[in-house]
Image (cartoon, rainbow, N blue to C red; front, side, top):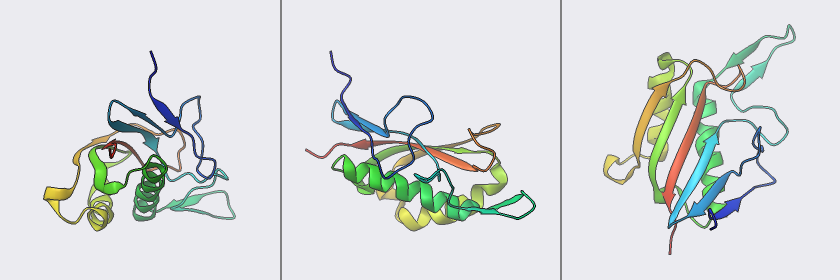
Length: 141
């Protein structure tokens, strides 16, 4: 029995373990948790300073995450319009309002947007990350 068709994109940051960016199965596309990490292992929404510290921008990270999901869905033959569910993982709920500002740019009409859950998590795989999003979309026929 197959678990569906995997999608591994060479122009996106790969998983930190052995999993695809997405998997199409049973008429759905399951997108793995996506961050703002680029293929070169730098991050959108992170400004590195000479002293080794960094400044994090939740709006830039949110925009990059949703753009990454868009590219992954397109590789699987879908679009953001096909999303049915998102799970948003935030390191700090103080970023909720600004994350929503960017989210609403992509999904301006509530009736057309995906269902969504947002949770605060203790941390993500890198301390530079403020947000990760996991998505499920309908696979167009």
